[in-house]
Amino acid sequence: MIVKQQTINLGRFKRGYHLVTDRIESVFTGLKEINQGIAQVFIHHTSASLTLNENADPTVRRDLELFFNELVPDGDKRYLHDDEGPDDMPAHVKSSILGASLTIPVKNGRFLLGTWQGIYLCEHRDQGEDRKITVTVLGSK
Amino acid sequence: MIVKQQTINLGRFKRGYHLVTDRIESVFTGLKEINQGIAQVFIHHTSASLTLNENADPTVRRDLELFFNELVPDGDKRYLHDDEGPDDMPAHVKSSILGASLTIPVKNGRFLLGTWQGIYLCEHRDQGEDRKITVTVLGSK
Amino acid sequence: MIVKQQTINLGRFKRGYHLVTDRIESVFTGLKEINQGIAQVFIHHTSASLTLNENADPTVRRDLELFFNELVPDGDKRYLHDDEGPDDMPAHVKSSILGASLTIPVKNGRFLLGTWQGIYLCEHRDQGEDRKITVTVLGSK
View (tube, one colour):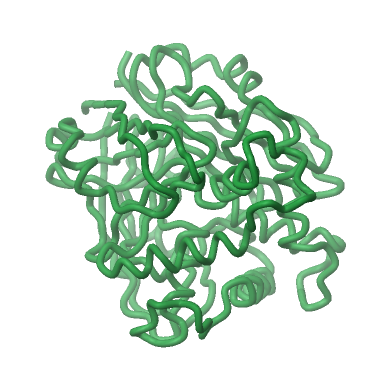
C-alpha cells in the first residue's frame, strides 16, 4: 500500500466551469504508481468547487453555470456577508452545494471514470485568485 | 492494509430514488475483509447520482424526488444541451448537486452507517441505461 | 500505512451552521499520527450535514442557513413525510444537498485545509438529537 500526495497550483480561471481532468492526470505523477485504490481531489478554497459532469459537449458546462447563477443570484440584498462584492456570498453558497472534494476510484494508474465523466473546476468569482488543489492517492502498487 | 475494488452493474432503474444498501453489501465481497477503514461507492454516470438518506419510510424517497424535479424542471427552454430530450440537462444538474460518489466508514466488515441511513441510487433519466458502480475499500484486516 | 478511526458524540446543536474544525482536531487523536494521507469525516444522521466553508466571518454561516431555509422551506404541504413536523422532510432534503461526509487531505498530523476553510456541522432540525460523527484517517506515518 502506498500514498502519494501533491499540491498543484492550477492558476487563475475566469468565472465559469472548466474541464481539468487531463491537466490533473498529466501533472500528478503519483497516479501512475497506483494499480488499485482511490484518489481524492481537494480544492483549498471556499469560492470555487470541484464536480464531475459531462466531458464532451461544452454546452453542459455553460448550462450548469446558468442554472447555479440563477439558483444563487449575485447581489442578493439579504446577505450580510458582501465585503468582496455581489458575487461574494453566492460563491460561498455554490461552493457548499457543489463541494470542495471529489473521490474517484483508481485502476491501472488512471482515474476510473465513466466514459462521459470529467472533472470540472467551478470558478464562482468574477475575479478569482489562483486556485490550488491537492491530489492524494491511496492504494496498491 | 488492504484494498479491494469491484465494479458492479446494477442494471436499469426507473426514474426515481432507490434504496440499494443491501444489494451493494451482499454483492461486494471485499467489504467483509475490512475490519476498519473507508469505503468509496462511485457511479460512472453523469445523469444518475448516489446519496445517503432515510432508509425506512419510502415517502422520503418520493418527496426528495419531488423536490429535485421542481428545483430543476424538465424542458427548460434556456438550456442549449437538450439532444437527449427534456430530461437531459436537468439530469446533469441533479447529478452535480447530489454527487457521483459516497465515502462511508467501514467497521467489522460492514458499512458503519447511522441507524436511519441508506444508500440511494438516484435515476434522473426517464429512460436510463444500465447503471454501473465501483466500490473500493481501504483499511486494515 | 496505518488507519485510525474514532466515533465522537458532538452533543446537541441548535438549528444552524456551526464551526467544528478545532473540536474535531483536538478530540481525534489519530490525526496526529498521519504524516500524509486522507481523512474522512462522516455524520451518522439524515437531518444534519457536514460541509466546508469560510472559517472567519460568522455572517457566512448565517447567510448560508438563510439560503437553504428559503430553498427548502419548512412546512411544504406537498411533502408526504412530515411525522416529525414541518422541519422533517426539509432536513432530509438539505442533508442530501450538503452531504453526510467530507474527505480532507492530511499532512503532518493536521487537516490540510485552505486558509479560509473550516468544517461546518449543519443542524437542520429545530430539536436535533445528539450528533455523532466518525472520523477515519488512512495514510503513512
